[in-house]
Every structure is written in C-alpha cells, then in structure tokens.
Image 1 (cartoon, one colour):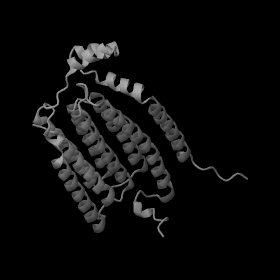
Image 2 (cartoon, chains in turn cyan, brown):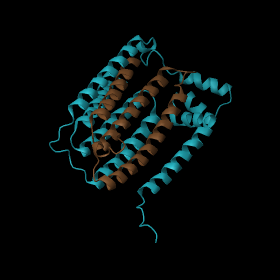
Image 3 (cartoon, one colour):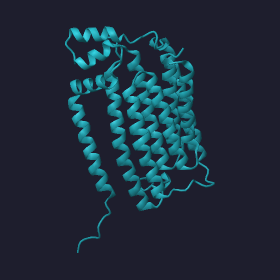
Length: 194
Length: 105
C-alpha cells in the first residue's frame, strides 16, 4: 500500500465528509456520504481488513444510503433555501469539533505504538499457518495461510462462530426487534373503533 | 510511510466532522447521516488497532468482530430511526429539529 493511495482515499473520505456537513441539499449530503464511505472502505482494505471493507460498501454505501435517499425523496425535502443555520450552533459545533480533533491528535502523538507503519508489524502468514497446523486448526484456513494468502473472511467467521456465538444470536434478535419496531412505527393508526 | 498515527488522525478528523454536523445542522436527516459518519470513524480506529496489534502473525480478529457488530447495530438503528423520522414528518410536516420542541420545559 503506497502512501499516495492512503492520502488519496483519506482526502476522499474527509472531503466528502465535509460536503455532508456543509451541503444545503439533503440529496447532495446523502450522495457525498456514500462516496465518503467508499473512501473509508478503501482505507479498511489498506489495513488488510478485506471482509470489513466489503461489508462497509455493501451495508453502508449500498443498503443504508439507498434507504436514506429513499426517505429523502419520499418526503420530498427541499433544500433549506436561504435559511441560515443559527450562528451559535454553527460556531459551537465547529469549536467543539476543533477541540476534539486537537485532543485526538495530541493523544495520537504521545502513543508509543503510533510511530509504527504496517511494515514494522508484518503479517507472518506462513508461520501462522504452521502454528495452526500443529494445533489442528481448520484445514481450509491452514492451507490458505501456508500458501501465503490471508483468508480474511474465513478467519472472521472462525472468530465470530467460535468466540462470539451468543453475541451473534443477540444481534439477530436485535435485527428482529428492529424489523418489528419499524413495522409498528410505520403502520398508520386506525380510526378509533366504535 | 503511513503509520498508525495517520489512520488515527483521519479517524479523529472524521469523528470531529460528524460531531460538528450533529451540533450545527438542524435537518434531522443530516444529523442522522453525521451520526453514521461518527460510527464509521470509530470503526476505522478499531480496524487500525486490529491491524497494528498483530497476534500470532495475524491481525487481531476480536476487534474486527466488534466492527462487524457495530455495523449491524448501525444498520438496525438507521432502519428504526428513519421510521421515526417518517412518523415525525407525518405529524409535523417538517424535518427541522426546531419543529420538535414539545418536550422543552
């Protein structure tokens, strides 16, 4: 991963992020957010998180942003024509954001790990593969690792189903509750029964 | 040469942008989008730390599992939140947060 690509995608993410906040038209905001998420997914992939990068594009840039655009167009929201945002809120928001960004930058500078680049902490796939073979891990993962390939989705699935099975069921329940909740919320209230 | 700090600073800047949007904007849909941006910024931090904390020659997949759960919760949250916004629009014919000040004392 060359530095140039990092700066390109970081600029894409932050530039379109800025447009989300400043655009007057909600449709512009939504499309900018989709582009910002695509940049973020590229940053994930630059960190060897291929699976997370893929679901970032599928779930966020795909499903969530389409839902946003659908609602914006369904409600037919016009751009806030000529209305200025309240100065107190704007100044307060920018001030708070600048303070937060400064704080994070200060913390990042003092972090001992922070100076490491990905080359300093290389992934040793063949060695990990040999270790897994000794521990009798899943053969499909072991073979991929020994071939020098990072089986990202397989490792992710192994972690999720071995260590976080209960959490996975809770999240499934949450999605069910969400679905029922949305149906209840969007149902029109009937006229009071006689 | 891209270090962990680079990723953390991008993530912090994205989070700060989202925070500024949540406070400054009054369109409830855009506030929601900025919330999504803040969640994603936190995800970037998690993934960066996962890559830089190499365990047994592989990235730390516990952190990436947390990102997976965060994305799922965010998707559920968006669905419910947008349903609430639609219900709100039906009641008030507006998506401006100033229109919803009934609870103000």
